[in-house]
Length: 276
Image (cartoon, rainbow, N blue to C red; front, side, top):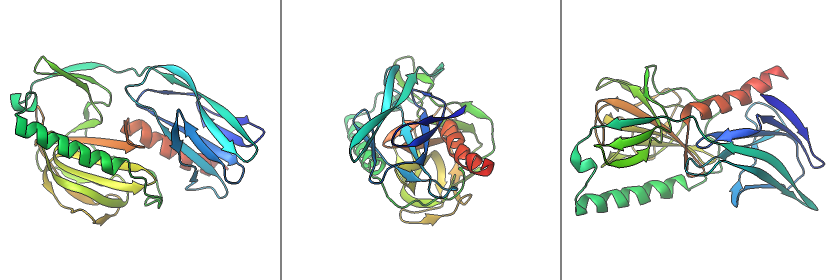
């Protein structure tokens, strides 16, 4: 649902007044003071130029999956004042599943744990980097057209013990199925990793990254520029998996968010422009 909120400082178009844990909130600004800055619960939020409407801005707010349901707000600070835009964080409608994987992927050795710690630190350093230049100019597309086998946010039990949550969306894919870039960007990671297996991460600018895991082959290297739809690798069953598939994820502001819901929010930016 889209509606307008008129504040003394700005006119705001919101797509709903709430967002689930693990989702992305989208707020459009039809009018905003110069030098305004945004923050959400202590995190700086970038004020971005609208991709399809001149003199209009928007903000994307990643909601932490591990956070609690609560009443919150986006803070808009500007010369001479501050306003709050209410935002309710709700529980996500997430399910649970039990998976059987190789035991070493549940109880890794000391050397394997050290490897995973290095890989995690490397990835988080990437995701916390906010490249100011936008590298996309159209809505995001799915990396393949295939049935979803495991949605984002599913609580997971591995081999009856280890628990966690699914930070992406899994697509059914036989080994060797082409995987396409969801949007244009720059490859910032392309390697084999302990849990994610063959991995590609694409930086789309402005703190937006897409991830592609468990690949059997990588067709890109770090530093490559890729166009939307380019084949970046082939699906597989590498890493911690129960069978062949593609894990597709979106990282926003250093947090995993629901890829399909994120796609829908970006699509809404272009739809709102077409109505004007």
